[in-house]
Image (tube, rainbow, N blue to C red; front, side, top):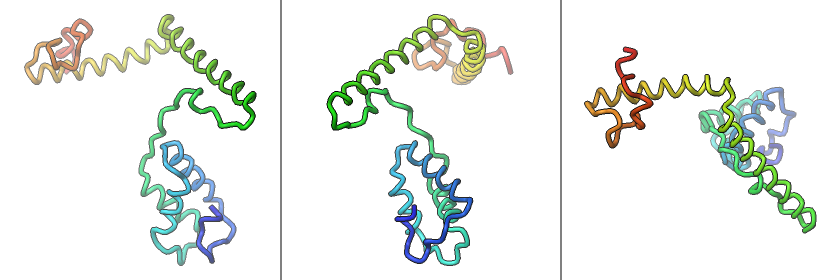
Length: 165
């Protein structure tokens, strides 16, 4: 941040700088380049008269970014750093591959042995989605399970359109 600020605005940052850091981190997690986002916010308008430069820049960033949604995490093997030492690089790559395999095993275990808390939480959500889809089918006068019906398979949603009004 210090390098990006224009000359004359190199005062110490206030407590609002913590929020600016969080906003920049959210931008980074959303796949944006924090340096570019910061530079664009700084050059957007003059900072003259700003009592707290970090707060002004943070407000500009939040206005530009809106609700920045983080990108889904990729596989560990795709996050391996480019190390110069080939032995260390292969060791880190092996660890990343093992972590990917572990994540897959945990997912398979959770699918095979459904934890009761997850079944309860997901069943409620699935029922709401199914009810909404069945209502849409009934509204559009489509039989449940017909091609284009969003509540397929029909057996899971049969008769639920009128279950709740």
